[in-house]
Length: 150
Image (cartoon, rainbow, N blue to C red; front, side):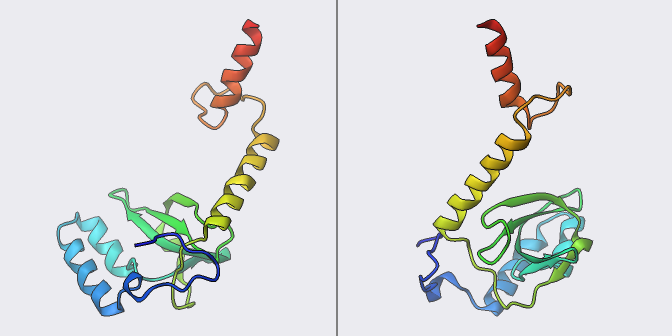
């Protein structure tokens, strides 16, 4: 079954399970998880679409619950960064969106988001910083080292 859809594609019925089916499957999944995940999962179920109070233009689905008590969220089709996964989000930041459903980003949206991030990286992360543990600047730091040797 397709997992990436174009803007005008109809989402097939088999790709959209009923809310009751999702609730039953999710509850079964939660039963075997640590208490922190069970607590967060019951308050913030994975079948809802969410945004944060400070970014109402976000449309996220919960991608993962962590034992640290945080969430991993994926931006959907109607979000400001379609296809991006965000890590370490506190569940308290979430607000149920009310849009009715989270839709996966289109392939074109994912490509545009990747291009946007690359432009940002080129503009803002071109020069390495002084932090030896900084992973964001690793490519620029390696390139600077190669240039020094040449």
